Length: 397
Image 1 (cartoon, rainbow, N blue to C red):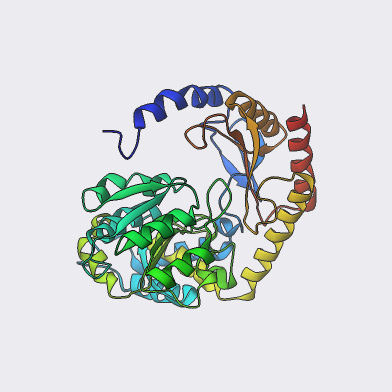
Image 2: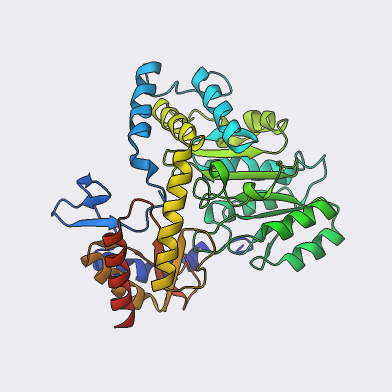
């Protein structure tokens, strides 16, 4: 008990901070409509959501909206409501082929990135993706909850340990003492920072390390054609690499994607991948939005949006320097120490028209609370200046 997680502690410690955040109007915020890049509450308060993961603004791109509507009309229904392994619209295959072109790898769609991990990781633990040898699995200490929650399921199949964050030395030691090692981590982390991809690829080359990376926070925002932080550092996707990502963040659509280095693994996922084979596939509207976004990824428009996001992050880093300034990613956390302080600053910035998230345990370690801010390519200069001014004023107060 408690070997892979401690939900009781998470709730016991974290509930007080969430309750305080709600009392300050920072939880359960409801919106009535959107006006450009602003949202409006039923009471008329307008604000820009600075923790939206739609870093490029594609979630409100006219082509994605029209693509979703057109796909519903083409299919004449929202979903076939059956396992895709048994019956599925041909559109799903067409969209996956387009996604494979964008990412240069075999692409498999999932209802969400969490469902993707739930389908893939237990199979990886079984040894069926590593030539019949069950891998020794290392989960990075900071990897996302959607992967951490699967430690117990993987632990029923093979040995699972939690490694210190980005501890390449530990990973190499395990590679020396175990015939097969699989490392589970984020590519770009939701609280900022990134995996040491080059060093991990060197271990893969030397020892055959299997890499499972969730790169949700860099897909679309980083790399040629938006392939993401991890994929952009690989000429081809090795048979010992799987990348998963959400398509509901910078990609602007919905669902998740699994990028396979070995196309033969698709059958394992279709037949034995749990939620990947249930009757909850990406529906017609989602497929239409994904198709439209993928088409944008193959044009110069994506380059323009990425350049705009980069410019915004450089300005932000100049005014409000943080640990991850200049790392080419769109997530920043301003350390404030205690949860109450982070909640206070977030509430005041919200009054100025910008929603930033106060992050505290269990999102971050105890005593490491802060203000999380996400870059947006659709900010104009005055928005950006006003945001930085408000944060600077209230953090200094």
